[in-house]
Image 1 (cartoon, rainbow, N blue to C red):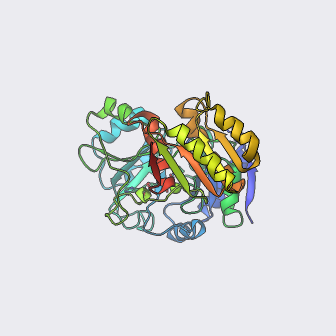
Image 2 (tube, rainbow, N blue to C red; image 1 turned 60 degrees about the vertical axis):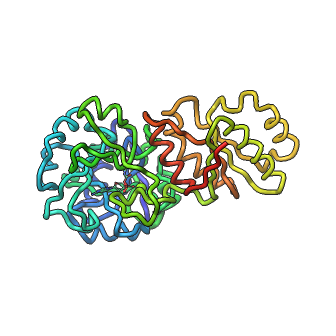
Image 3 (tube, protein in one colour; image 1 turned 180 degrees about the horizontal axis):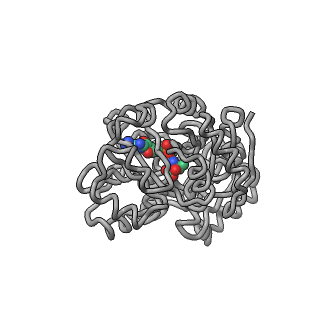
Length: 355
Ligand code: TXA
Ligand code: MG
């Protein structure tokens, strides 16, 4: 049985938070909102609970977890050493969507970090996450609250879609603000390396710590992987997704959507608002022959809208029964576009059409 507690996102009911915190302390699995996506929390110091968590998600035990904290002094017992840049980064970006990879203390169960000698730590900014972790008074290991390789959940309904009956409690506080997962920054190397791009952008990090490298994200699956979240075919909808890149991306994508629909396929289309301006043929064709076979999702007018709505749109298109999904690529080399492009490339698992 999975219990759902509806809570106010700004001021969650202390009674409900207390019950969820007690469940966490008892080894339970509690999903909660963060400012990025919903996480599935367990007591990071309870190895049995951590093993249950991997089972519930169907996540391979080789994929390490992020440990969530709410006070800077609780980092110390988790790590063997605090690199000098941590203080500066924490002062500027915590609480917030930045995860730091640090040298691990032997006191942390190896299940949490997939036996790596590093540990990922983050201080989330959401009031509900803050209240829960503070009330539980333990470090909380929490991956995104989805089944392995499915898009991360940005609403409690997404968590239930994947995990109902497999976890104890969901704290439902509505939609998350950022929509893509935190930036993962490895500070065990100098200069630090971004392992996963997110809302804390390379420019923001460079302003504070100078040089920051960005790890290539589309590594071949055979290559050794310092962050298994870099696995291809992650964040994927059920329907195969193809990305369209280049100056004629939207036109090509729309023509192919109409062609596929004419052949009887159900087609999901992901574009930005405004992409369809001037696409008269698409509007007309869609009306004439394929209205009910093409489901269109406009992701918004700016990149923060796109980040916020992307995963929900992928899930919607799956629910609409899409056989294929065609999406416009995001090829910005910086800003939030880097994170969006990264997630879409992985959802596409290499299917990219250059126009
Ligand atoms: O925004 C987020 O980060 C969300 C919320 C719930 O906090 N969490 C999240 O967790 O996205 P998860 O488990 O879905 O992704 C964790 C990422 C993976 O790419 C994992 O490989 C990487 O962090 N990671 C964890 N520990 C690591 C370590 N010791 N070294 C390198 N990468 C690590
Ligand atoms: Mg995840």
